[in-house]
Image 1 (cartoon, one colour):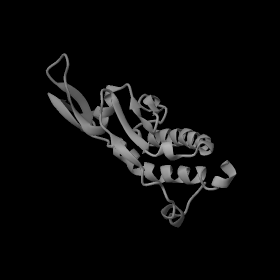
Image 2 (tube, rainbow, N blue to C red; image 1 turned 30 degrees about the vertical axis):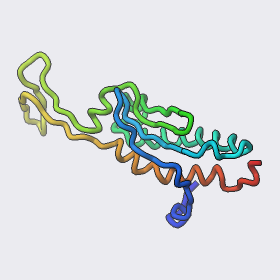
Image 3 (tube, rainbow, N blue to C red; image 1 turned 45 degrees about the horizontal axis):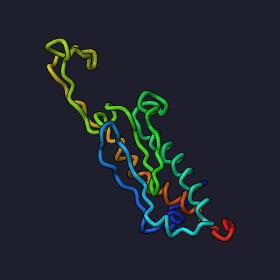
Image 4 (tube, one colour; image 1 turned 135 degrees about the vertical axis):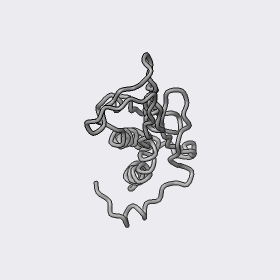
Length: 164
């Protein structure tokens, strides 16, 4: 479903929820969507809430895969997943050390030899180390997640009387 800019600005996402960066922990690069007032949702609406969380997980994983460098189903894209906690959904790259390095940038050094050999524009270069700039795909995924969360929330709770 397509939304106009005016439609997205009129959506009302609860203030008790939010999209935030989840700190790097181990081999995880992730963003976290939190809803704090789950206890206040009436029992007859909890089914709609759980359905909204499932749809949110699917949409955010697809969004995150679109921001990951390379092919969406490539080596890094296969590690993109979502985990549902009690009051939040965590979406990110799990189980790979390369994701964090690729996001921030890294320095490569030769393992067994004194220099690295690589070809740039047909010219062979030898360097003891080289710096690779970060791709910042994680920040791009966070920036594009807000409208997705708001749209799915709006679709899930547009006609509350139909849910009862």
